[in-house]
Length: 639
Image 1 (cartoon, one colour):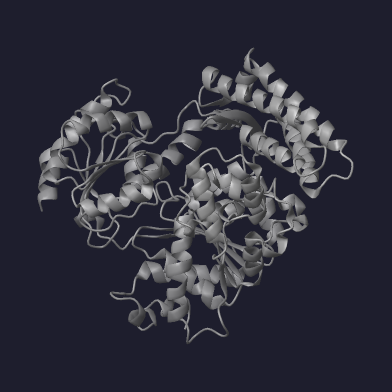
Image 2 (tube, rainbow, N blue to C red; image 1 turned 90 degrees about the horizontal axis):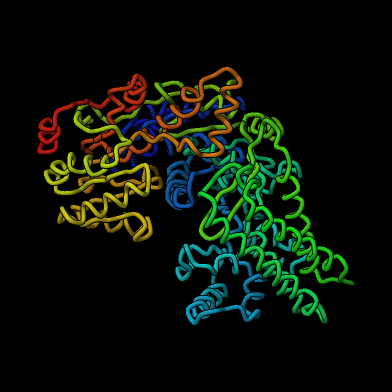
């Protein structure tokens, strides 16, 4: 049986999946994936919600008998694919497969416990609180029992714990085969398993981290892959841009200083020589961090940093400190492997700085950002199409990109141009959901311009009757955290429904509590616009405050806009508008997640009606009915 037949009413999934029904779009997509793998062609496919795209690519991939890498957008989706979807397909196709299907789950090294670094930290005396001591003891006890070293299964290390970098490794500080714990290394074991597996499940960050080191021959997972299937592919342009960047950060330096001090303490006579240099350099880094927070916005172009008369000299002192440390490490006689590694890292950081502290080419932008208490400086390519084209040519693998949101007005042009995929085949599979019957878009006609000072309050006052009539059960999605906080304060005084507000708990906790409440109202910003699945009556109202245009002062967007304008095109049409359309499609997609779901989508931004580009947004959404009448929206909810 071919993939089209396997996913039909006479195929094996009828008995494996309760309620399984033949879906024409799913079968056609599976057929296109099967053909792409067989002919080594690149395929781009948009599959609307409800198509069943996961099975549509898993079935032909598993049936092919070839080595396939599956890449997903997040670690949560990665676990779902590996632990739920792949076993289902393996079981259903058991009678049709030749041989045993081998599979592996592979995450980035920052997810795996590092015995060497954890032991170093335990012996360093740097633990500064009883809670940290207790947590580290719990992690250590877990490490003696775990099979794969995946810290997500430890359940004792919160996502925001400062202990993460102390018990995991990075590509910079890993000692590789020189590590005394190399034979028991969880990262090595996971990668060896992946090398031998037919199906390997990774996430985009790991995939592009491997692609980014192509100059040294690719990483461990990519060689030999017959096909690479990229789900949630709308995330790829931004992730590719990030991983093909070169970066210099305060965290890199502080990690290096801490490790240098730790390694020096194990070599006779070295601590006294290293400690003054480390302390002075750390002081300079912390001073620079304070100046970043005091003098600069969250992000900006590098020239702004260079012109700052207080911060620029402070960074110069950091570089002087690193240079002094490098000279001291270079003069060590018979250094340990740990100190040798610190010397190499120091030289790499100084080399990155020398690359950044210069004139960028026309194809790059150098910019800074503040993250937490730290700072980062990046050199980012303005166009990743050529880099991606080189990677695809060198690998020689089939590439399949799929997502529910890749097109603008049913055209793939924006996605293809961004990744240099003009030669790819394209396929658009419509959703199986009955949007015309089950969803309604309400466009309020009395809201002010979204730049008005009281816009958020006016929007909330307008949609409050819907929230009350719907008994809560609503997502309110905002384009800024400031608007989200205004809304939180406003709603806390006016509604009795349970409020779930981004930032007050983890995303997982908020979603679980929202689902369990039955009448909750969840307020979210960027991370809640996608990858969130609430099926059933718990959610039947989604409110989007503004059209999700990127911030105009974003340094990378500004540089790309200048390049596009220089090429004779209009940046708004080529960059900002398509990106905003895809982001809106993601947010709107939270409403209908199942064939039985019903609900109202509120698009508050009046520009969607008053500006000519508003029609492009509406034409790119699923075919929902539209109304300007509040009573019509209330009546739809009452049904």
